[in-house]
Image 1 (cartoon, rainbow, N blue to C red):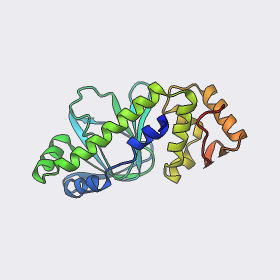
Image 2 (image 1 turned 30 degrees about the vertical axis):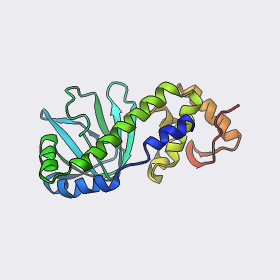
Image 3 (image 1 turned 180 degrees about the horizontal axis):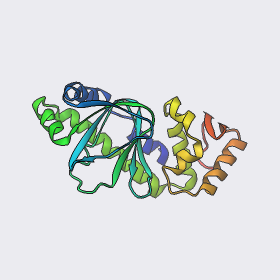
Image 4 (image 1 turned 90 degrees about the vertical axis):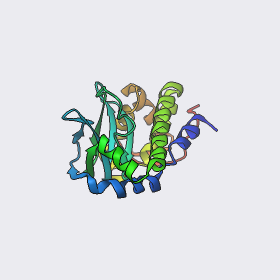
Length: 215
């Protein structure tokens, strides 16, 4: 199993049944709202840590300071649980498309999890989150430049059509890695010339099976 396959396998088991079970019980006690594309959601509101229930749409988890995208999540999902004991506001959520979201305090969320005995469902969510963090760390620290680009292209082609239509392949990769623009553009150019990818105005239209190395 190569590095990309190994890392990808860690993030393919999104526990949808468990997430939906939590949403069903918790959402009625949360404040529902529509978040517009580009809106920033903070985890701390009036010094209270917030939990966000993502019912529709997609968001990114970004690092403060440089804005690097650490993760992309599509509905259904729950944000703000794994980092509830962090006293540092080093992360924020950015909305990728108009999204239906509910918000409540983590304290109330935990009480509801206990009241409805949803600890097992929550554990599946936390394991999934931890695996995503590990996958990102492994990807950044162990992969070559080409490995990183190959991995991100496979991620991009799996994203919702709306996201792929709004984001160039180069920007998608640059926002999620430390690679330079010149490096990304050079490798994308090689892949395009060799017929592995089809780009239209920089947007990824088609992705064929990528080689394990450029040779």
